[in-house]
Length: 193
Image 1 (cartoon, rainbow, N blue to C red):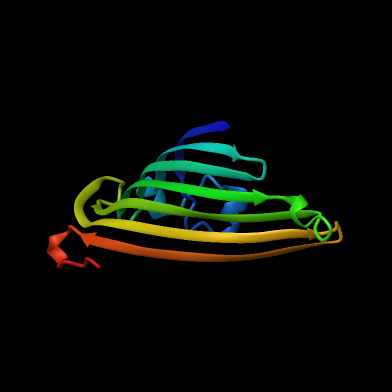
Image 2 (image 1 turned 90 degrees about the vertical axis):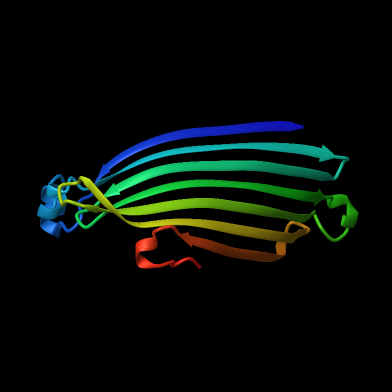
């Protein structure tokens, strides 16, 4: 049995060299197009990622790996035409079962594996845009949205080596992805989907 843990925190502050011509991009990349410089254009992003995995050997030929992962992101992008604010929380679970038995067909195969598993994934994504005064200051709300993103993935794979001379792999995958969208900005009518 094995347990593994992972965590990461990232803070990013990036200035955006938008609308630079190729000469300025090469010779003076700190220069910004006038409207981007005036708006103090850029992006600030905080991100936390974490995960945990558990691996177990069940008998001589079967192993199982299950992992959980999550990601939180808080971002603000200042642009001359508006300010985009994003908040995202993603989480998922993946499990895989592996049957590995080279001895089962030892006269034919030097290696034989069969994998089967699945993954579920969900993201809560909130985003708003705000009017700006052109100097990077937030003004009135102009959109307010919430999206739910769902992903289901099921897979299997068969792999075998033909006495160290060739490897054959075949697999099948089923994926179902769907979204729900809600519009909380009533002034332009309900744009939910």
